[in-house]
Image (cartoon, rainbow, N blue to C red; front, side):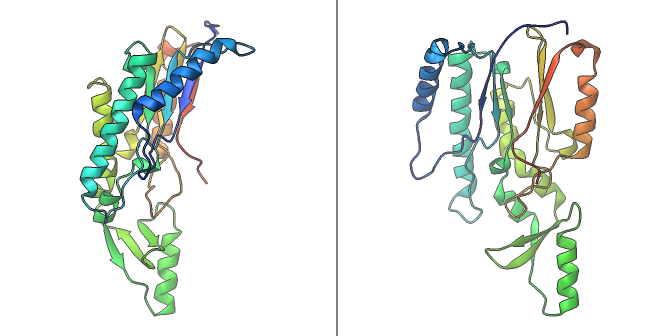
Length: 251
């Protein structure tokens, strides 16, 4: 390797708040600051982090039948954005490019998921019932099962379903001040963060392909892996250490 620099990475995940007992952003940042102050006292000493990875669930999320659900989701993202800006300002010299953010399952807008789906009651006929069950477990199925309502839902509006990351995408663009955008097309939901001074890069993936509150399994869109690998093979990253980050397991 051309680079042999030692550095550390601050890893944070699951920022979503307990809505019944929220913790102010300043308290969280103060807690991190106390940790930073103790790094040098550890054995061996911990290097001050050169960058931060925030690996998903920036918000807690809102149930689709909640009062003013869309406005509450906007409020949560605004709170999360304020925290991320404070994180960059306080610990990374106001350089937002040193903070890597990516989505998790709580970043999915449940309102959009349900707006994209059509309710299907469980049929009485055994053959029709079995046919729906087979469809439910088929690869990349558009069918969902709701334990709450004890019925099936089928995703019928693919555009609306794709938009379930629209609030995350807006926050992403604002945080990076337009220098980065988050694509709603699942095959383009990855980003590469280069740290040339460290000879290091991070590929941020979305493990929520076809994921929503009615289908909690994690997955990557196959094209994102292909394109991410192509990006890593670019000559400008020759000899660099490469890392990849995503939110949850894929089982």
